[in-house]
Length: 327
Image (cartoon, rainbow, N blue to C red; front, side):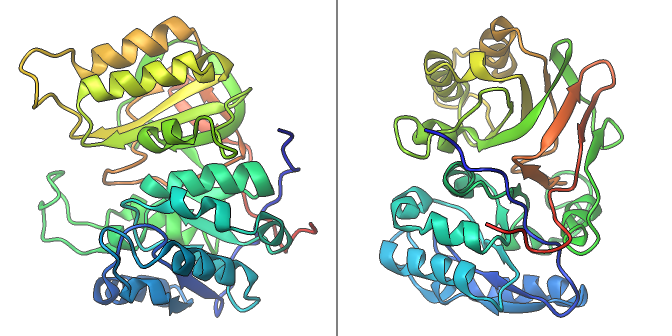
C-alpha cells in the first residue's frame, strides 16, 4: 500500500482550543478537567469530549460514539489540537470508522500513547499526518512527592516540556542528560520514527493499518507484560519482517515487565537481546518514552538520527508547520 505524502499540523497559538476525547477506555471527566488546568495556564482553551462521560464496559461508549467524536474533532475548524484523555483498550475497534481523507484535509495535532498507538499507525499510514507519541491527560494527575517511585512528584518537568512545545516548537534532542542509555547494537541510523506500544504494534499486523518499518526507526515500549509475552510479540514482529525492515530500533520504557507468573524466566534484557541484536540494526535501550516519568513526547513520521556513539536520538525538525499545510 502506497503512503500519502507527509503533512504536518500547525503549532498552537494562545487562545487555540484543544479537544480532549476518550477514544479507548473510559476516562475520568473530573480528573481530566483538573488536568486541563495546565493547558489553560498555557493560554489554551479546552473542550472536554462527550466520551469522557460515557461507559460501555471497558469502553468509553460505543464504537460509533467514539469514532464520531474523533471525526468531529478533526473536522471542527475551532479545534486546533486533539490530546487523548487516556488509553486502555478500544482504538483498533474504531480505526475503520475514521475518515482519513478528512483528517488529511484538516491536519491538526493528534497526541497520545499506549492504546493510542493503533491510531498513530492508522492515521500515519492512511493520511500521512505527523502525530505525537506523548503524555495524556491522565499523566497530568498530581501525585504526592515520591509516590510514582522515582523520587519526585508528577508531572515531571520534562513531561510538561512536551506540552510547552505545542506553542513553542523545537526539535527533540534526546541525550543521556535525561537518563542512561544502553547500546544493544552499535552504529548510526536515520529515518522517520515509527511505532509505540509493542502490544498495539503487533495487533496492527495483517490489517490495513499495519505498522510500516521500512527505512524507519522503530520505537517500542510496553507495560505490565512478562518477558515471555514480550518474547512472543518480538517473535511475531521478527517473523513479519518488521525488525529486518527497520533502519534502527529505539527501545523505550518497559515498565513492570518482570516475571511473575513463571518462576523460571528469561529476563527482559535477555529477550530484547535475543531479537534485537541478531537484527543487526543500530539499537539503544533506556529511552524514557512510554509508561514512565518523565514521558518524553516525540513526533512520529519525522526524520531522526539514532547515534550509539553519541548516545542520542536527534530529530531533524519539530514536526509542526507554521501554518496549516495544503492537502
